[in-house]
Amino acid sequence: DKTEMNILILGIVIFFSIHCVPIIPSLRNNLSSFLGDNGYKAFYSLLAFAGLGLIVYGFSIANSYPLWKPFPYSHAIAVWVMPFSFILLTASSMKTNIKRYVRHPMLTGVLIWSLTHLIANGDVRSLLLFASFGLYSLVDMLFTKKNIPEDSTETYPVQKDITVIVIGLIVYGIGLYFHTYIAGVSVIK
Image (cartoon, rainbow, N blue to C red; front, side, top):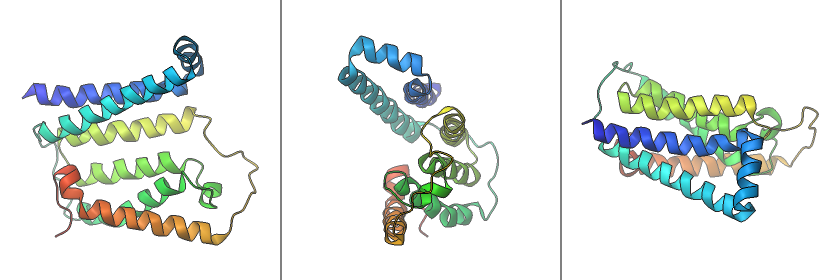
C-alpha cells in the first residue's frame, strides 16, 4: 500500500530537512533568533525525533518491493564491515586519535552503515532508507564545518583508542543480537 511507503518517505523528508538546517548557517541563525537558542534546540530535537519515529514506523509497515537480488555474500560483508561503522560512531563522541585520521567519524560511520545495508538489501524501502542516510552523510561531509583542522597534531593515549574500539564492538554485538527486534530481520543464523 502506498500509504505505508508515504509514511516512510515523510519521515525521511522531515528527518533530513531538519538535519540540513545546520548546513545552512543563515537559516540556522534566523531560526535561532526567532525561536531563541533553547527554542531552536527544542524545535530541532522535536522534528528530528518525529522524523525518526516516522522512519522506523514507516519502514516496519512498508511493503518490501524487490528491486534486485543481493549477492549471496552480501550479508556476510555487512556483518564483517559493520563493526567499523560502530567504532567510528563511538569515536565521534570521544577524544581519540581516530579523529586525526578520519575527519568525520560519525558521518563516515553512517555512510558505512548505509552502504553495507544497501548491498545486503535489494528492496524499495531499503533503498529509500539507506540511500537517504548515505546521501545525507556525503552532503554533510562536503558542506559542514564539523571537522578537524588541517594541522591537528593533538595526540591522545592509545588507551582511548582501545576503549573506543571495545565500546564500538560491544555496541555492535548488542545491535547484532537485537537486530531482529530493531529492524525485523535476524542476522544471526
